Amino acid sequence: MGKKTTKRKLPLAYQPIGFVLGWAGGTLAGIAFRKTWKLIRHEDDAPDALDPDRGWGEILLAAAVQGAIFAAVRSAVDRGGAKAIERSTGVWPVQDKGGRN
Image (cartoon, rainbow, N blue to C red):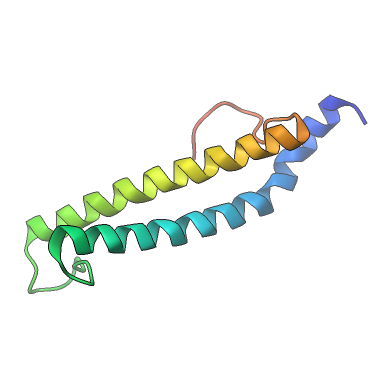
């Protein structure tokens, strides 16, 4: 089996690994956000967008912090997983160089 064949088949083989990494990253990001929110506002729960007792500023702050944490954790997990696959197989797991869909 040549390297070219491996490149075509690896992204499909990487999908289950990517799914598990994504799930784990989401879990880690959720934990990180809850701890960060507790440091920022000294509350256990972040405001829900539909909570009538919360203001726009608080809801948008929570959304911005949560989005930033999720994006950073997701990128770190994706990059780490791709580098691990490359080290173990010699092939980058994604064929195109574009970003996420």
